[in-house]
Image (tube, rainbow, N blue to C red):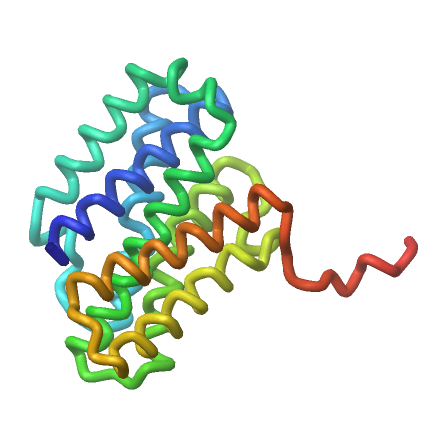
Amino acid sequence: MFYYFDLLGTGAFAASGVLAAMHKRMDFFGIFIIAFVTAVGGGTLRDLLLAVDIAWMVDLNYLYVTIAATIFTMIFHKQVARNTWSLAVLDSIGMGVFTVVGIEKGLANEHVAIICITLGTMSACFGGVIRDILSNEIPIIFKKEIYATACILGGMVYFALQYLSVPDDQLTLYVASTVVVIRLLSVFFDLSLPNIYRNQTD
């Protein structure tokens, strides 16, 4: 289940990369590059920090999922693009999944909770940061702090549920859902952390 959960997040992030790239009217090569770095960027950083094999380099299923998600989203782009929430939903699903995956990999390498939560947050956010930079946008993580905060809160929920001995399969679902719900609520209600510039004038 953990493995397929990881593939799901990879596909969701790839699709969000396609939508962002097509919005910028990139050619096929540009679309694929954005989809690829969005899908595997966070996981690559995580694996490099853990000094373990980079997942997509030792398991081609990650590449196959990325390619399939890219082609599928391109074909049905018009249908998907009609829903203004598409990018936020796909991004949120990827965030939820990768937060759990990062935490699990941190635990597998015997790291403490705070390091595992950091790994989960980086796994979930870094691909989106690369996507936004390459798309000439200010990364969402620097504009909407709830983006990363959702992952951190999800990580806290993970260890709280683990302390309560919640079964692993349920724990994974609850934590990923927590991240997705927090992220989507922040988008829907335009929520963010306090802005230090709000009461300042130029």
